[in-house]
Amino acid sequence: QVQLVESGGGSVQAGDSLRVSCTASGRAVATAGLAWFRQAPGKEREFVATISWGSSLKYYGDSVKGRLTISRDNAKNAAYLQMNNLKAEDTAVYYCAADPKARLSTARYAYEYWGQGTQVTVSS
Image (cartoon, rainbow, N blue to C red; front, top):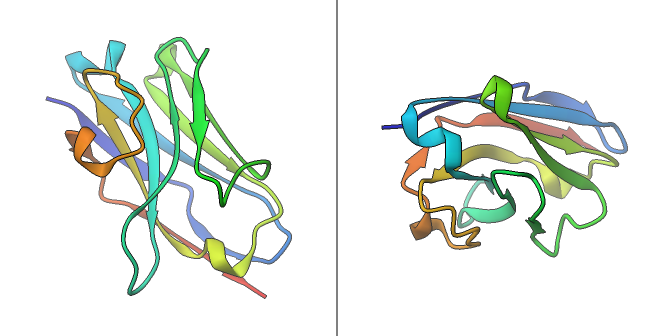
């Protein structure tokens, strides 16, 4: 079992930066691939980024490349999403997800565990 808790969301202005965090617990976390997804009102949940256990591999969705950066700290069982130059279209609930098989997939079905989400609102 893996438990994921997101934090750090909030309301910001366009162009601002924000970092959301994901704290993980459970035995499978040690080697799991971690990812961030987001879901805007009325839209499908969208892949944002994923990272391997050793942080050597990172993949990003096309809409966030160059502005959002995923990282993780295995000593703290945590993952982060640094978001710079935020835009109104980044407004969404951001979810942390874990895949014990560490496939680094962009597909929702590959992730077995999910957090409850944290709201990010960007005003233009």
